[in-house]
Length: 278
Image 1 (cartoon, rainbow, N blue to C red):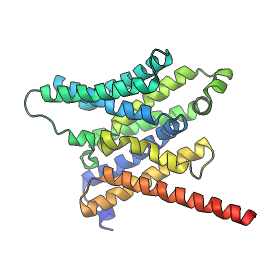
Image 2 (tube, helix red, strand yellow):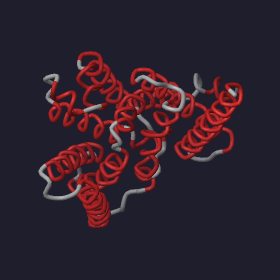
Image 3 (tube, rainbow, N blue to C red):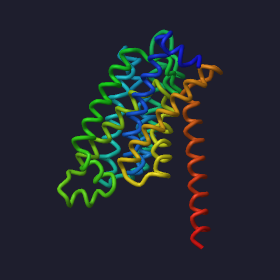
Image 4 (tube, rainbow, N blue to C red):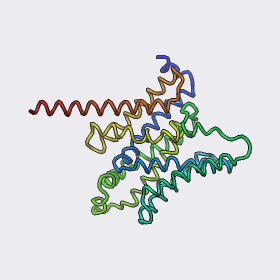
């Protein structure tokens, strides 16, 4: 109970809880599209290439999150354009931008005059350092994301499930895909402080993969992804507050265990159903 009482006593802990809820909402919605479209590797490429923007922003004296956002969106568009024209395979384009982005980030960080910034907070996150400004920006993004899902839900779900069918129904598939890639890139950048670059892919994919074990519709997977992400991050925050370990890493461990449990339960249920049917 100490954790829940301390939320109202310490502003940094209250900010962490609010940020975790907003992050879970964004990652649950965007993550569902990533899993259904099988864009996990692409999201990993965007996540790691965004570090290049962080390094350049540090070198130029700008906000590192702004630099990461620009770099992430450009990386997403670059991957889509290169693979879409057939000039290079998608996995190759992702691998190139992934490695180049990380390399550019490291170089520019160490070229920055004066004290080199602590890279650990970007690589592995620290949700306790989330500020009010971060929360406002993340909340605004969640509102835009929710509005886009409500207004363009049918086009998004058609594109996610079957691009050719969506095109036959008059959906501008390429435009929808570029818009969703932009949302993915922004969701990645705005949640870097929650779990960091290295662990962010897990927060984007594990909730949706876990929800898909017992959900059949796109909407139900999306809703349960948000619920699972919220539970995992809040549980991680509560535990990390007691044993003093990074909440982001703990959230991934909680998510992995939830996936393992649901997978086992599903297999047991399937086995039991077969036995009853004999």
